[in-house]
Length: 392
Image 1 (cartoon, rainbow, N blue to C red):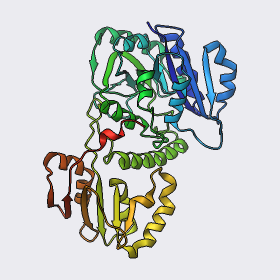
Image 2 (image 1 turned 30 degrees about the vertical axis):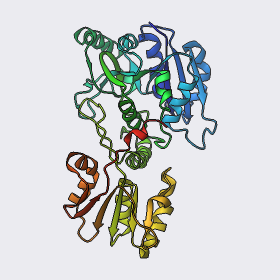
Image 3 (image 1 turned 120 degrees about the vertical axis):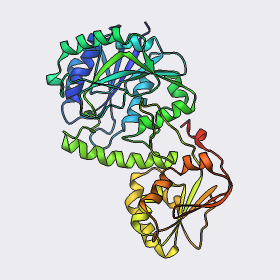
Image 4 (image 1 turned 180 degrees about the horizontal axis):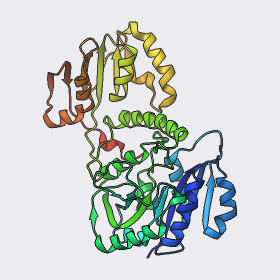
């Protein structure tokens, strides 16, 4: 089989790297795959451990040049590893994962140009199963991982699920280096979270086939590396802030929230050019609605609200909010689709309509004016822009 490169970003993840890296060396069908680690933060002796063990484990590692002061972010870290890789094929791997027996071989047999192949996760039952993973408890932490029981279980699943595939994607995933670099890699505006959802959308938009292999297996400690596991309070609180900011960035870019089917295959609504005119706006409504449109227009006497919002929110986004937020009478909306909102009548049901407006317009929209709930909608044209988002 071909040699591949495992790419692993690490944010103070020594506890998990100590298990992840040896599992690749032990359980991969090919024992000499390249492994690259990018150290984005080190508050636990990660660098010291890598210095002592990288040669014996065959690991190359690179360090955030501003270590201790700022984060590269997971997307940029992955792209750095990919750039440094010397193989035609890379595998995106999380620090809190353990490779199952021959998982590399079973994934690679499905890989071809313009495809992405992911392994199937086995996880402890911390979160509901939508059908795309297997819930089985082999330990909550690396120190209590039941390696022998896991291996026996994997060996049985390899036989039971031989050559089984479904359409979907989640880490770890494998792709030709040329294919991911041809669309620009990860979008840096998704600095800490949602970088995968954005990239998966772009894979689909570019016509790549998404394949989940059910006899290529990994154990996943469920969000320990990133911080989505709430058992680590400090890391989890930061993850929640990062996730909130990145989710808003995703909405600003795509015009909708993250959507996928039960097997994690992305669902991508059309991206329209939408403006929202808000009468009687206040700061809370501006905060709620701004990410869901390309422009938002509020009364000029509310300029103090805009100024405050810019002061608070601009540091959390790469979008220029001063160009997104307009004030009357000096500016007017010229968007393809215009939605008029009045705070005095605005309801949660109206907000649900705005969150799904792209799909509503795609299904039944036409040029003209109409009402949805308490919203007034004017469609000037229905041009779709999602194809413009494929490449960075």
